[in-house]
Length: 395
Image 1 (cartoon, rainbow, N blue to C red):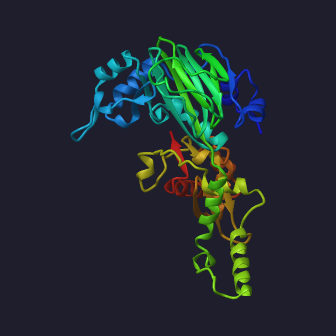
Image 2 (cartoon, rainbow, N blue to C red):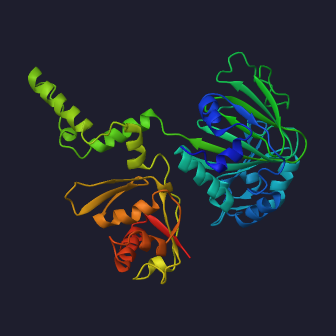
Image 3 (spheres, helix red, strand yellow):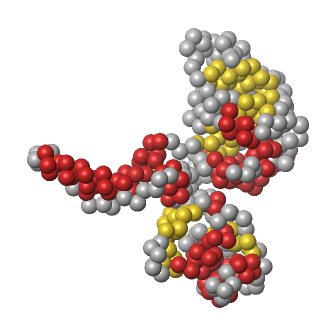
């Protein structure tokens, strides 16, 4: 596996292989970096612009102070047809020590969209990015643990992070809601500066405390699929089988019950690969849904594609595909992003060129399929993939 450059840049100076073998899913790690390391991702100017264009989306805004969420009615008009955030009141609450978070900013800012997609492609777990901004010395969220892997990217200002491990037995939190003084017992006490990264594994209790100055960080959460997700997928695979819908033969003879059990086991194991984990990811697309994309105006036309040979085609769902077909079949079943569609077998010549997720020009796809498919057929097959939302196109 080649170390992705984007991940190497994030966790430097820790090598990617060391991060994955020593820290990922196991223990925290602090990665110091240059002050401008994350400057290309977002800035105060960009945040102001985002807030000004999404003021109707009150569900994205969250203001908290000393572990308690502020009543949204204190900074937003919630009645009527269109709820809206009041900028003046938001700012006043921040001046008084509240922390602002904006939910799923990766959905509205392109550099963070690309970063979240990179995480989803590599770690194969649903990924979301929030921003957190604080000004005073009061913590926003209380001492807590997250149900996902957490990456903290410090963008501006300083913030103090305290980690308490996977248990807080003996930690006294009674005064946390009335004082800015964090409870004793922290195993890690680290001040993050711009350009620093902190990885916190799932289940590790932590607390972030501002230092009486403007501070901005990104929280990137990766929610990995777990064993129960794979087991539930096995159950879903069996729903179409005959045995799954039959009554349990509780009052039948022992031989009858054993035959029923054997049939159930055969159906459960039918079609399973040795690498069950990889098959789960290939057939389900993991626990996240593909982000929507549009290829207008061309995708809504009868032809479906732009003219010429210069536009680009990109496979969705991060290039994770599985193709299955009987040797003598004229069709192929394609599993991608949790969906399965049946295409002409010749579509394999197109998908093999797109499977790494890199956008390819239609001209290159045509040349790559030369000897197997002519240009009109390549365009027809790409159009079929586009209509089924397996690919997206860009000029």
